[in-house]
Length: 200
Picture 1 (cartoon, rainbow, N blue to C red):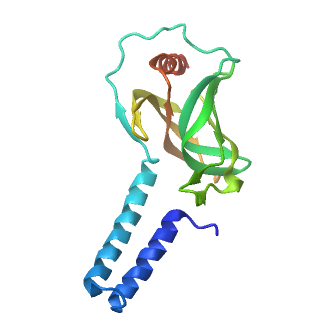
Picture 2: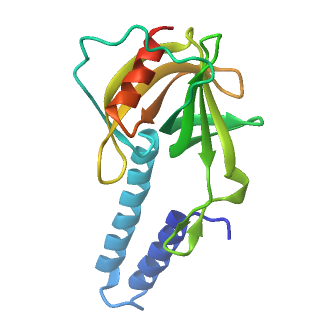
Picture 3: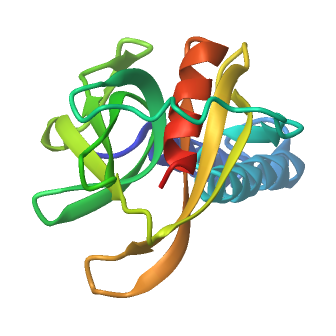
């Protein structure tokens, strides 16, 4: 019905809390307060997770040597998993852990081309079909402020990753600080992208 699973869970907790306050459920007002407390924790937790883009990033100690000749050619692409604010056709949205390709054009503009694919959660929740397809994030040398290597936690196992701090222009034309995360299958891929970003 177009509502998120969390919204359905909050509605269920609200209905159960109301039933407890009306003593339809055993436990009475005490149970009702507990259920409302759980709902509040879910709301606060969701807000905190959204601000962190649902990932945890731990910076590594900086490497002492990077291959100065490792910049990518315009036709090179490296498979990554990307997290950040993407845009397409006048729309923008924050997405987490999308399969993507990283590439650099001859102008040294960096592109992260991500694909949002169909998926289901517990057989009932699924992604909004209108958000499926390709999403893009472009970073120019002038907007890139810092690149930090580290480990990205999303799921059980950490992955080698880079945090890209940059300035992005919103759809309303405002410039604001932002962060994007690229995680990799191997340290070697991370080193190639990191060296390429440092040759801006």
